[in-house]
Image (cartoon, rainbow, N blue to C red):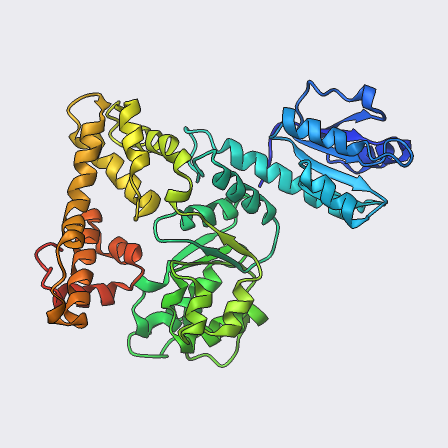
Length: 449
């Protein structure tokens, strides 16, 4: 990704050679501010990054005091500790007072440039694109959200694959697009919902086919892997990939080679693979539903997204964002008690459910201010049936299978009421579209569909 503007760096070290080497190594858009002692440190200023030597005086780790003060006064600054003394107790002490990482001296220019590029990525993620510009955004300043942004920035420039895990509706595709967006512009991004692909077309869609490979193959066609060459291939709901095709995906990840259906030779394709799952893959491995070797290959770089109930501090910002991005714009906002009512809800559908609720309230609220009573009425409408079912005495004499069937029917009914798109409903429940259609028919929910 191309970065604009100037980044500032504070370098605290008593060795003039370190300052000279930094000036020679830094990219032109990084401006260093040098300090060789405590008295020279401009604590009143904020910086994008601060590199602090631990031993500003012989045998005295004064750098710990510097890190602690910078962490307290400028929490947004990325703090990097440096020292030729790499004792474990010193490194742990540096992390404890606020350092994000510890570098051993002498510094390597490649490592320094890589760290700076990730700091640039984190700065861009925190600012987000201007609202007048298209682009993905991660909304929220909670501790959980800050951790997500730091993890995203740490993955800048890293080759794939990357596994993105989290509950349905918590923002996995947003995270994938942010990973893509922070790289160089112009690279393709190919999103694929595995659960939405017909099973008999899996292989041809992913890897392509040659003319005459099967009925209807009237010409050669590149697959989605080849379409993503030089960019990112995002495979959503990876748990829906059949076991036989998991072997072929593993081979592609290991070798970078793609063989089209019906072809004799393979093509080499270079792309980064981003993978998302609604279900924990390690649990599916234990159940024998997912290949262990593929799981190990995917999970080397893993990004875990928190559910909305673990980042409720972000709900006011998310709700405002959904209201202001609604088209047509209705110029509505939440009252303080309305926002409190949103925060009190448990959000089983995560951010996707919050977006749907905000859209509905924007449409139905009679006033420019959306009050607590409107919020609670809408949330109660969606959850009352489940609450009644939970409170009603169980008819144990009907048997476990019948009781489970009733519970499944109620879950699907609520999901259909929440999402008006059958594919998105399947995503919300973590099942394929064909499986959802069958369950709708089995439970007699066709009219609601």
